[in-house]
Length: 480
Image (cartoon, rainbow, N blue to C red; front, top):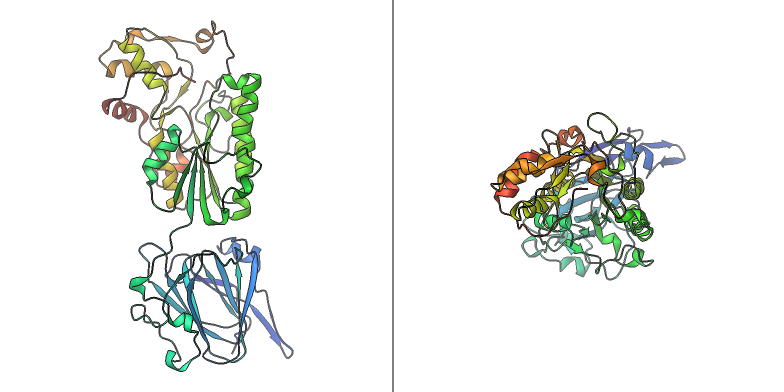
């Protein structure tokens, strides 16, 4: 008997992401009515806004009809239009809850959200039962499913009607036991800009599991008009965008302006559209250059953006595009040092060659190493931190570029007094090419990401560790 007038409520099940809901059903002498799917109310209770695209109904004539156990690579909202079922759900995803079971009776006053990779099965307890489900991907004959035998002794589902006495398809009877099931892999994660300094750090942090994909410019052209069809995007759960145009001064030229906007804004807008349409989490790496550096103290995530030059303007535009994705992390960083040409290597090279540099001392900030950015991105994703903007830099006291140069000289056994501090204006006074304006204050407030449990490394300690580990002293770039 359907229960009437229950309040809308959610109940956790013990299987991560599998959530049972009570649905209000309003009945009288004519029958009953319910809101089977009400996006606003249900997402307010924590149901993922999973974007259903297809509605299916399975009608069953007889009591005891039994179907499953099938795990599909999409999410489902399962309910009963008429009748009653005994439902069984088994976690068939990779991970510590593989094989976990949840069972419940479902009638029109109940529904359950079944996340991707959780096996779904049911047995009808009333004649003329209509089992309905909304799914967030279109069915395809080439889709890879994961199956489990209904009679598997390991999960030992307590079917109300013995399986020997019910209608089951021959195909369902032939599914493997749990010991022979290949777990469903997580949705794919795509790292874009994989050949750059941050991209290489992300590969080192995340590894090379089968569901991880790394793409450089040659593998994925973000400016292509065919980007929307370059992948089967429904197979992806996360995109990490580590690609960017970072030639700050060249961005002030005619060609550089076009290139900066293409990579930092137009490409991000295209990725944002793809992520929003396919329910993908977009991680986008931003910059302190979205600020003008005139504010006293550290910039919080909600500070007003006021970029000074073309590079900062294009990055700010990319941030705005990324923020349109319902599931987004915008990771704002500064003074990045990674595996490749960077300020630290330049100072090592100058020190070793006996060159005494002039280094700007009126730009204040903190170094951020790419392995720490990668670690922070992984923390946000795996910890399921609230979506939004997060500052992520090295921790500790602020320094100038001249301070950092002196620390590099000293660590190499050279006299730090060989470094002369100069103003930004003095440093660039003799420049013959374009010079981009720089924020004088690049300090970013870290309280928000620290509140998620992430501990940024002290920037000075990280620099010492970096230098102690040994770094080649060839090549390099000037401070930006």
